[in-house]
Structure formats: C-alpha cells, structure tokens
Image 1 (spheres, rainbow, N blue to C red):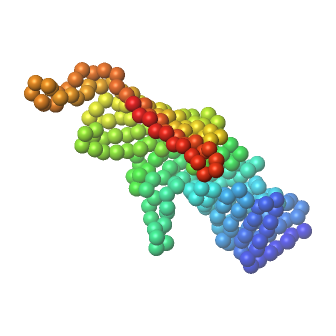
Image 2 (tube, rainbow, N blue to C red):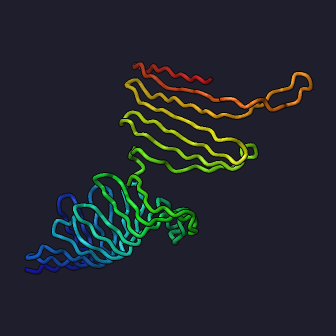
Image 3 (cartoon, rainbow, N blue to C red):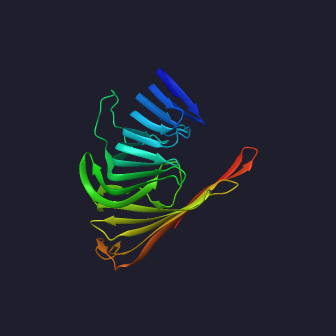
Length: 270
C-alpha cells in the first residue's frame, strides 16, 4: 500500500504537475510526500517550489516548509511555511515582490521594493493576495506599516482598487506624489481617479475614463485645481500672480476603424 518513486519523478493529476527527486504515495491515506527539488505546477500559471511537500492525492491540498510561490505574472511569494486548502494558499512569515531578485548575472540582489507580512493568503478563485501585519520595504529599508492590505494576483487583471503610487521631483512643483484609484466598471471600460500632491503648489485632482468601443478605443481625461495663476502685467511687462480661482483642463482622443484599411483619429483639448 506504499508506492515509492525516486529519480526525476513526474506526477500528473487533473492538469497539475508535480516533479521531485522522490515521491512516496500512501494508498490507504491518500497522502503524497515529495522531497528534493520539489516543483508543483497548478496548470494556471502559478508554480510552487520547495524542499518538501505533504499533499493529498488530488495534489490540491497540503502543507509545505520554505516555499517559493511564483505567480502567473512572474511576481513571487516566499514563506517559511504554508498550507493549501481548497486551492487557497496560506503562508506564514512571507514576503512578496514583483521585482527581480537576481541580477543579469544570476546573482542574488535586494528587490527594489517588497512586502513582508506575518500572514499572506492567496485566493486564485478571487484573484487576490491578502496580507496581515504587513510592511513595505524599499531597498531593504522599512518604509510604512500596512496592517491590512490586498491586491490582484496578476497585473493583467483589471480590478477595482488603489494603483501603484507615482513619485516625481521638479523645480516648479517640488516633490510630487500621485495616488490613483481604479474603478473597473466593465471589461471594456474603466475610470481612474487620482490625487496629485505637491510640496510647492496646491493639490490637483484628476480623472481618466477609457472605453473600448466596437470601432476602437476612446479616452477622456481632466484635471482640476483651485490656485493662483500667472499673467503678464500690460504696464511693466512683468509676470505677476493672479487671484486664486478654479482652473482645469479637459482632453480626449480616440480612434475609429471604418474597415477596408480606413480609420479616423481625433484629439481635443481645452
């Protein structure tokens, strides 16, 4: 009732593939023990790598120590221990990063940024990764604590939520941070609202609407702020500040396919 296979073992079950140096299958309990260069491919683009696995004979549930989970978009989750029940993976003392962990020569390197957490849950059916007791690190230095956090498990999926912040620095505006929030209305349309914060000038609010029509894509965007402006003094010719008022900009562009190699494009700005 105990089947032992050694040497480049390959196990297939319901689209999943397990490879290891050694696999022990207990027929009575249905337990599968794999050890040595273990690699479990879910068949959906996610791959788990570990020294050893304890799984059920469905290859879908089990426990693991020192695991590396490679998601479908190439980002990685590493953990001291973990378990999977009904295809939901729960990792303890884990770290996530979409950045490269090796350089072009194959040598280990500190990722540009990573999330470390006490507990991480990956739910592929919901397409999200959830964190508890997390902190964000930049170049290995803790930046901010994030008690609760979640994000999509693939950057190819359009899901409602906060997008990655953008940072900038210029002489006129000073330090800049842009915090965008995406509303995924439907597979063919979305709306992004953003807050642009500066050290030298007042904040600016922005909106960006995108839709893919039958004839082609269109995009409408706008910016609004309440601030002083600049104008030329007609008497002296000097540039002077004007009174604060509501200021903004609206622009749109798109493309329409007519068939037979013909298309029209448009662009407007106010």
